[in-house]
Image 1 (cartoon, rainbow, N blue to C red):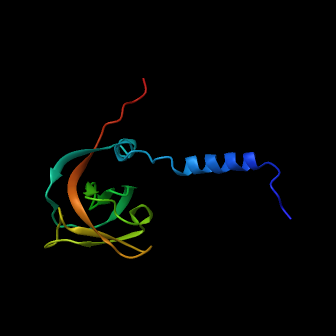
Image 2 (image 1 turned 90 degrees about the vertical axis):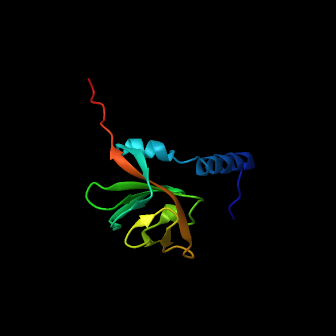
Image 3 (image 1 turned 90 degrees about the horizontal axis):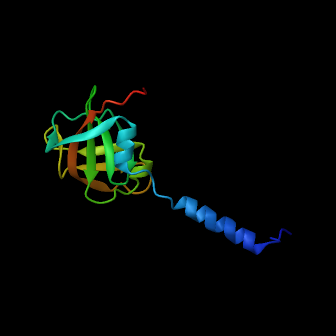
Length: 132
């Protein structure tokens, strides 16, 4: 039979593990900077929308790739359930475009819940500083 010889040590391990689990992720703006991207102008829609890929930044922010060198930051009005673990997305756009108040839905884990788009911003490359 296994018994813990030192309950205080077990409690310390549990507290440290809980603290590590609750450490917040890197802020989405820092993630964009690390990727060499910066948000530019806000657009009402992405015309001729074709979802070529995406990167999840957090539960409310997503980079969508819509062609060669076309990247947009999509922001949802509320946290999107399951987004952090998304492997596939479905979208409901208007007339071949994706715009504000259209929806993206996480496909896969859990129930499919449409997430309403609050804003879309064009992402532009940022020149990185070279070491002297």
